[in-house]
Length: 481
Image (tube, rainbow, N blue to C red; front, side, top):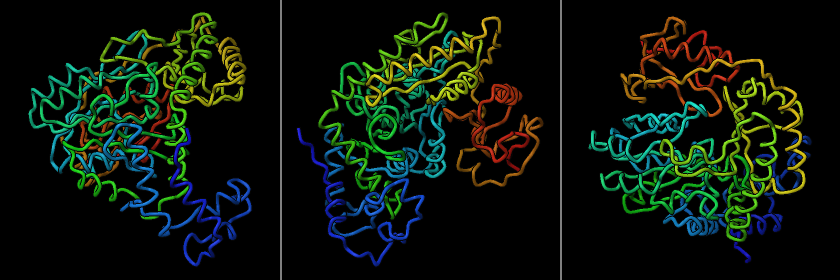
């Protein structure tokens, strides 16, 4: 099958015309680019870094090659409309929230949502109703939100107009999207999905079903995370009916730059064409590659490697096999310690937390090199294991913080710094997350507790990175005056 690449074709045709650019960008097709940059990206890429020409369409009002690329991608995902995102999935999530809801409306938000959701809540003036996903103490992982939790929340608060879902989550654990979609729609709410880690879903029965195939009204996808697009490339899939087309188009235009990079948009065009040509083969290749690496890692004595143990628990209905979770704390080492050892051996991992290292495997890993990588991982784990060392678990912050003000109200309120150790009882003026995965522990407008302070200090001892506050050491925190 020869899939169409309308946007890439248009950019290449324009480049081959050798039109002299008396317009932006200032490097003029690479002529003025720094030699180090030219060496890094190449002359063809710089010559293809073009501005908004008539032949190249307009991302804000697409009628030509961009529109055709969007239509091809929408057809792949069974959506009514697809928007190209060149500001990462963060920007796409902002647009999705702004296009689906009006200021002051309520949205059900799982507490394990990415910090980008906070930006959408602030920009849209939305009122979050938080729900805590299940937690598995044996694997020490946050799981999913169950259909029962969603049903209960919507029955208790009929004003909720949207349900937000992150599926699959960072560890590949998928929620029951189809059942949750039915519940949301029955209560008059839309289902909005952060599918950043699922742009490959729906192309093989060996993978969880996609959000759009499961009845979601909109899904934000990080096309760069699992597929072949470049970093920062994302898509927003939308099904109209409960969402107005003009509202979503205006919202996406609002959060999209007027100077979109055609290399990034071209990468999205290439990704949709690659899926159209060989999506099933790519999906199956990723599953085989993951099975190869899992099999090798199972040979490390005492190392738990997540398989299907959590499916059927805490709202989890499936596991994306391309996410390989290693519970390295069972070997007496922390996630950061294991990741540092892997890096010294020339291997970089996707994510670490106190207990785990997460390995991301895609279709691009299929090949003989993966067997060598597996051998290196096993060797390093054997070298760093400390069977005599017992790691003291740090249970997650149990209760949701009290929300005193909405995120938007807190964002625009007067702030000031106080000692973090003395902040208990104060109202947070900023977010605290540990990255990755970037899930907020406290958000602007929420009350800081002694438990939160203790938990953050324990996480710092584990060398996990603090994300969000101006003072990354957490000596001080901004609170509301």
